[in-house]
Length: 205
Image (cartoon, rainbow, N blue to C red):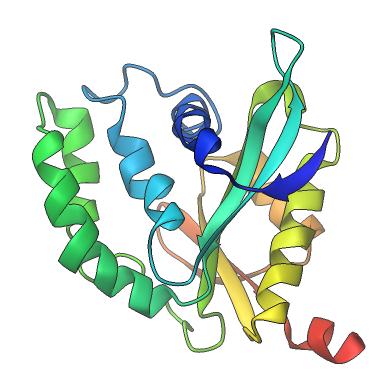
């Protein structure tokens, strides 16, 4: 088990992990009429967009061979990434995802929103990330290790802070982020935005 940079061969597995953890940490297969839309919004664009990064948690899979079993990915520049997403990425991907029932309508409309990622206090926490682990890798220290590796990478890029947005209903996520150095910096009826300053890490080197 360990952390390594993403490779081209990981892309399909990253999309799969995104789907299998896409419903508040649980399997989202069949929740949306199109099982690829979640990864096209929340995972695969970070493999291509400005400031993007991805670190993989590798462990033995069902066949006993090492494979990606989790990841942390994001961007060091949320504002630039948001602009690229709505101007370049989503116009190409949106035609592949046609709504067929109500549950996925919110995701398609949210993806097209040019302000979706522009959270409060973005100047203090300009980077953002997403972290997902398959259930068999949870509770084993992988999440903390991935967060620390991502924060180290962003510190090397001189990013002052990083944030993420977690659904209020995801109780495991809400309990986890304070334990790895994040503070609640904004909230609404459905989500909490968690921020972690990275300046101290840079000066401590």
